[in-house]
Image (cartoon, rainbow, N blue to C red; front, side):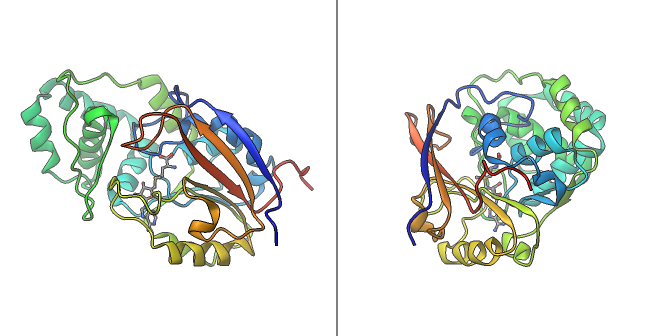
Length: 282
Ligand SMILES: C[S@@+](CC[C@H](N)C(=O)[O-])C[C@H]1O[C@@H](n2cnc3c(N)ncnc32)[C@H](O)[C@@H]1O
């Protein structure tokens, strides 16, 4: 079967610091809000919405703003992120207080010490992660395979202030969002939902996350879920390189600044959907 549709959509990701931006994160899709406005159907909020590879949560947060948080699920297999997200949702005041404590003690040595401490230990862990995330070199968080934070500190030793207003607004809007810490395969039996898949870029040697799905497992997952759900996928690879079925619609997106580590100039991504975003909601 031929590819049903291809279209080119140009978008500048220079300023993704909008209301969906929670933390600096490689692959953060907060700059994609306008694209989501076009490609996520207006009736997606009638069912469950799962941000399967949630990361900084930009898509889940976007959906909470647009549809309310009752049916939105944020998932990531990294427990550092899900612990952090739980405190964004449930105790933002405590999180801000933890951050301020780190900010007043911040130094290059302090940063290295915090890196060795637990990032999954409730509010304390969430506060440490927020401090590390805001002070990571060039905003590029990196985890090793054991979910250990291993990015160096940014060059300026001055710890940045939080955008408290934005953080509190995000906390308010995600109030009922569910948070899960699973691997993507566990969503294989999901039915009648809207799934957003933004996996670590496959066939890429830059190790930012705790792991990268095997291409075949991802392809199997897409084949299984696409039969029963609406699925939207973000990737850098060409669709056939990662097993996206030919029936998907492909949207090409030019990024003015790469979200990737080595490519500092323009780069391209795709969004693939198994539905027609412009079809009127039935
Ligand atoms: C490209 S990032 C997602 C970025 C996200 N859309 C955002 O806006 O920040 C991919 C995420 O997938 C997570 N991940 C890696 N392997 C996974 C797996 N097997 N199951 C679920 N999540 C996984 C990583 O921890 C990482 O946060």
